[in-house]
Image (tube, rainbow, N blue to C red):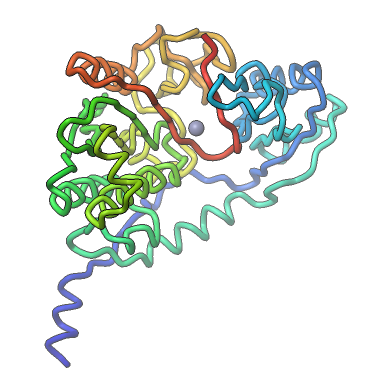
Length: 342
Ligand SMILES: [Zn+2]
C-alpha cells in the first residue's frame, strides 16, 4: 500500500499557475446593453471605441451583414435569426454614469468579475497534473497550459499512429511553435482545418477542438462507421492554441488578454487581434486601428505570424493535392456562426 502511494505521488505534480502580479479586474463588471437597432449599436460602438472598452458578445445588429447562410444551409435565413439583441461590455463601474447618458437600457450581467477570476485561479492552483499528459478523456476535466496542450497533441499522435501526425504550422513572435495534429487515412483527398485559441482568453475553444481530434482518432480505431468514412476521405488539421503567446500570457499575467504579444511600432500597447489581421476585407467590420484596442487590426493585412502560418499551411495542403473545403475557427462566446460573404 505504501509503495502504491509513493508511486502515485511521483506521477503527480501540483501545478503552479498564476504569478502574484496578475492583472486585477477589481471594480470591473460586464453589462448587458440592449441594442434594438443599428443606430443604437452605432452609439454604443462609438462609446466602446472612445473608452477602449472590451466587447464580449457580438451577437447584436452589427453582425447582421455577416450572418449570411450560403446554400448548404437553406433552412437558415440570411437574417439575424436567433441572435439576441444585446451587447455584453466589460467596463469599470466608474464608467456607468457615462454609459447612462446614451439612453440605452442595460442589466448587470457579471457583478464582480474579479471574484470569478479569483475562483478560477484558486481551482487551477489546486489542479493536479500528471507528469506525463495522456490523450485520454480525463484530460478534459480542467483547463491546461500551453505545454500540456502540446503534450496532448504529441500523445494523440503516439497513441493513434496509423492516422494521426503531430505537426507544427509555424512560430509566433515570441518563438513558440503553433502545434496540432493532422488526422487522415492515406488517400484522403479533401481537407478540413479547425483551430481554437486564436483569441488568447477564450480557453474553452482549445479543448473543444482537442475533443474533436480525440474523438476522430479514438472512434476511428474503434471502427465507428461514420468516423471511418470521414477519416478515410478527409484530412483534418486541428491546431490549438493558434495564439500561444497570448495564451501563455493569460496564465501568467492577465486572464482576459485577447491579442497576440507582438509589439506595435510607435505605440506602448502590445498585441494585434489576429482575428482582425486576416487579408479578406482587412480594416473593415469591427476592427480598430488603435494599437491599444482589443480589436487592433495590425499595421497591415496579414502582418502577424499566426495568420501567416495558417495561410502558408493551407496553401501547402492545396499544393499537396488536398482540396481544403472547410476552415472553422472556434471562439467563445457569442453563439454565432459567422460566414464570409464573397
Ligand atoms: Zn474570439
